[in-house]
Length: 101
Ligand code: SF4
Image (cartoon, rainbow, N blue to C red):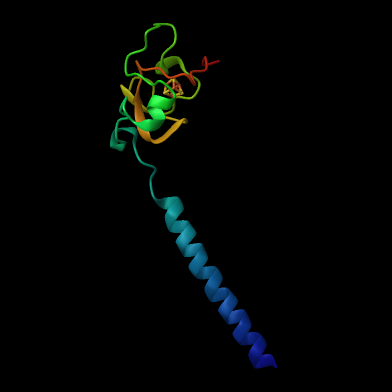
């Protein structure tokens, strides 16, 4: 009985260690830099659905002053919460535009 309990505890500890190492490695991997992301194209189906363009028609409403833009100010291409895994042009616009507070 004692041997079974010890074996179970050993297996649980081993499994927990494997999970901990796996999750830990994932957390240590640096997030992709904006410059590594492919640029969103205007003919991308999701971009088309949201009428994304690289150059906004209204100079007061563009990706650079949208609340959904991410990354660093000053970068020409930046990540956007609406288009994960792609970078949008800071001069662009789409119909999901929300004024940055
Ligand atoms: S939601 Fe649209 S307007 Fe706002 S940053 Fe993303 S692509 Fe640009």
